[in-house]
Length: 193
Image (cartoon, rainbow, N blue to C red; front, side, top):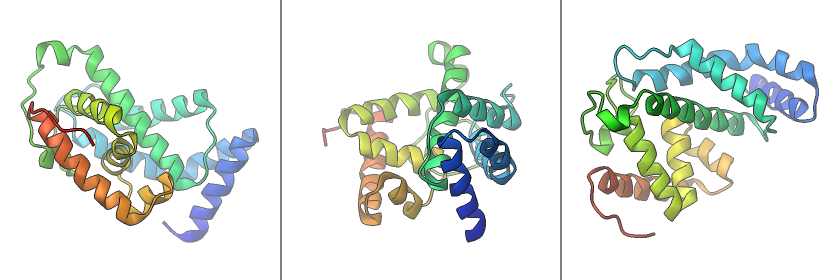
């Protein structure tokens, strides 16, 4: 994304946060393509025949953003928040379909499979969400790193910017969280941080 566009997005996000109603309308065309790309990544991980479509996920995310009346520091913070909302929407969708109770054809996956953007649609999002909640109880920052990197598709540098930590800290947290989540998803007893 070109720098001038990034600056314009940040300017509009701040204006929106300051209550300028027209800022959100100007923002939509600038962020829609990136939101759609992010939603496609999320939907590619879903099971085949999922009834929520990519465009529907984008629209639901945007509606929740408007309802939340959140303020954003910059575009990385905005897209990080969108990633969190998309995750919550998809997890809520999976839970409402009863996939946790009945299994709904899910198969266990290794964390390496779940933490790689892939076209494989059968990641158990509910199990991953539950594992992330358990990690969050132990170390919120490490959970946020996974959320922003995996669900948000943010780079290490963007994640560091959103969380206001160093790139090295993001990489350490990412490595630890992957190991911790791998044990959690395998049914092991992860150690505390």
